[in-house]
Length: 350
Image (cartoon, rainbow, N blue to C red; front, side):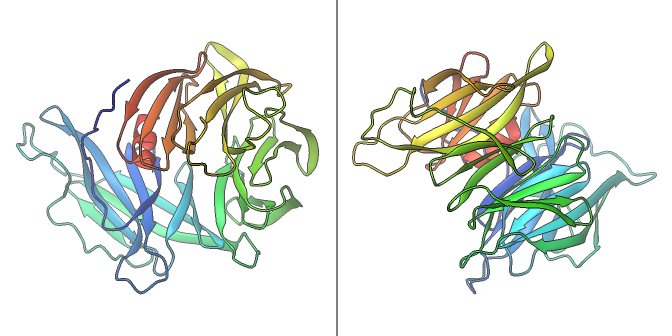
């Protein structure tokens, strides 16, 4: 399967670390930055409008929300609320976009192509509660609550996700603790030690079960703070005892045409970097008993992130080198490989 280069939609003025697509408005939300270091690189969350111009997809900058000295490293979306992982904190943002009355739509057949900022755009840095108006679209972003979510000696929130009805969010970081918070008050309702060392990823299922994967080579299933079971892949997987693997990512996905069906997908990568790296693996698990259903190699490039389409039909993998692969969920068969930025393409395709 040869690599293809996807067309560039937008080039941010800072390193990109997280991306979400709002299904209700079609907005593409990209976040990142240079952190607290005085390098001149800004920190922000960009809200982009996707549209097709002369048969090509284009992204237009609608609003730039300044996050001051904190780069956003991870994002989760629940309706009009964003949960942004910034250093050791979780910051909630609320955004609202609506059409202005009496505005005129953009003329069809524009010759303008590629990434651009619309005419009349406001400056990149926006104050709290600022509004941006662009050719009929009005966007307002405001900061809500913020809370510290990690308390290690070098604290960092590494992952955040909402539950099925968006009333709770769970966070994990370098101290190995899972913390669950009410939305939008961010009142803590649960806290427990899930791993020795960093939590790499976590996923909340519709039945309230929580799956966590960590640097300690373990993947665990929890009901609140009670351990239900641990995943056992290394014991039966296609690996050698001299090559320890760890779980890098986990995601739940529905089973197409089965409303009550549920699958768990995980990625396993070599725990240590080797001169001749062994392959990474993608595994599907039964979402009720958490027994492995099938596992397949997904190449020798180290996988950094995993996503599942809303329908449960496709899986997306991104690697540390920036390539992206798309797989069919029920068979784990690869269908697409691209050499573009992994976080961006995963967000767009899924």
